[in-house]
Length: 362
Image (cartoon, rainbow, N blue to C red; front, side):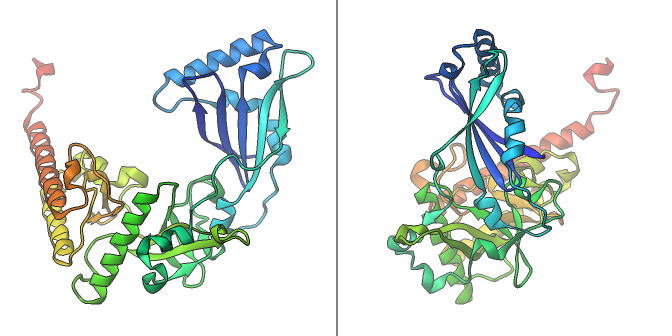
């Protein structure tokens, strides 16, 4: 059966390790601990060597050796999913299994054992009552509400829909494409972003901000009721207007796109376009917040869009005392322009060096 290793966790305080694996319709937490391998010195030594490699490797460490001993049991436990339509609900609420590595009777092989107990991690999203209590008055301005069962995961992706983090999704009834942004456990960033989207929505309704200004906008919220208690009603994510990127994921942001040689001709015009967009935001009484190249998306037609209104500040772009202000936005915009101009100059100089002038040819 197909699976994907999502993450692994180690600690500087001990040699335990937790590996998270997704199957279609299931999530597995695989626990390793030296205390469970004490009866098999060779297995313990092999595990500690693998763990040391994981701790030493910074880029794309391979944790597959810690997964393979569990695979037969995971294949047995994972549900069989045979339908063609997948929803966000299936991704957010898979069957959960906890397994741990123990020593088999021969003391030469790993014996995976299933553990009981609740999901060790928090449920997705934030309680709706928490968001309402912060004065956001969600019911008064949120344009649309959906259940995660109303949101389809595209089946044309390179990976199986239930194995990758949702990005582009489809609202079932209208077949509208959106970008799903899940809510994490951090409260302030979510509050700041919802407040920013409310300001954008109000500015658009009163005509202060044109609907065609290239910024990320809120299409609706996804809310699920997971039980009878008040805190069981949870907002699990935002649906944002979908912007088809030039490249997928973070690689589609200006931070990375600006380094592509073929985009050299756009760098100065992108700076002008961003400055114009920021001007429209400020005139409407809105702010960007954490302004930086990573929060600029380049679409398939080479247009730049301001995204991420979650606030905060990034050293080198916005001073901490200017966080969430127009001054901070303008400060960052000036630095973004300088950064793009340096990139343009660097690329221009590189193109001016002929093979005869290159140091390698001398």
